Image 1 (cartoon, rainbow over the protein chains, first blue to last red):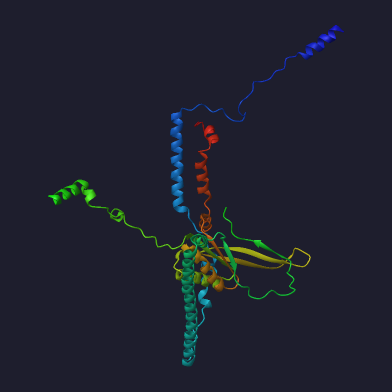
Image 2: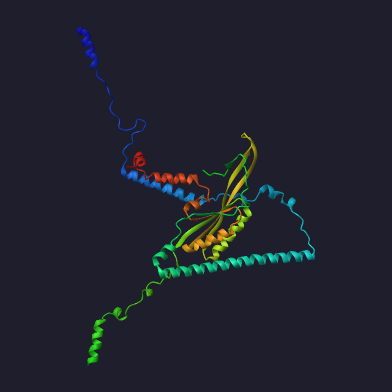
Length: 183
Length: 180
């Protein structure tokens, strides 16, 4: 009985070995202390090298994204001569007719442009006048009226080609974005 | 006698040449800069035109440029940006089999104007709205660096180098390199 107790005792006081605590990660190599002078030198050297590389890269880096609709279509440009039409020869009356039509068209566009110009001039003049009057009445309100627009961006859509079709059932489909990405 | 005394008194009062010269206007030393600006101004604005139809869009870009000049704004730049392309597909009924498909590209033009007096912007927007062709979307926003960057292909290598340079300021990385 006694021996059994002694055996238990010896079991309970068996020394427990624990290794010394490690302050840093096991996987990282311990860094040697570096001379601060050397460290500084290395830092400046590395910085200079990087800056130089960046500068030389910046010289050649600005490449605009290709604009497909403005690029030359190589396949069509190869056989462009096959698709040239012969010049149409007009009679003298036809030529006159076209010349008159062109002049009419130009005149009408010119008149519209003049109207636009007139509108712009009038609008600017009237706005200036109104603001000047406002300034006389109340400079605080003028200050508010003249401040840059806070609700930018302004978005507006042009008119649609046709009014909405009544009872139109949209077909089942998808829009898949195929814009070229540069990453 | 009395007159002489008064002259003497005057001479004593204006002892230095500088004082005798009287007050000199500041413009002698520095030119006067007149500020012709009547109203506060938007520095730079981008007018972005987007549309699926190429020809009206190009013509409208020209018109926007012309109208901005008519208002007396300074047109800094007027350029094209790469289009956004899309593939539009329609499916056969009750399936995902493609019935029809078409490629669409949303063309993109930008007119950049500067020195826009704030109250005049609304006039420009009004006249642009009146002239917008079918299916063109007009966005007026103030210019940012991102808009400029969007025109160009991003340079990955350059960005990497810049990141690396920035990393050298990070205390953790400095410690690992043994610099601190």
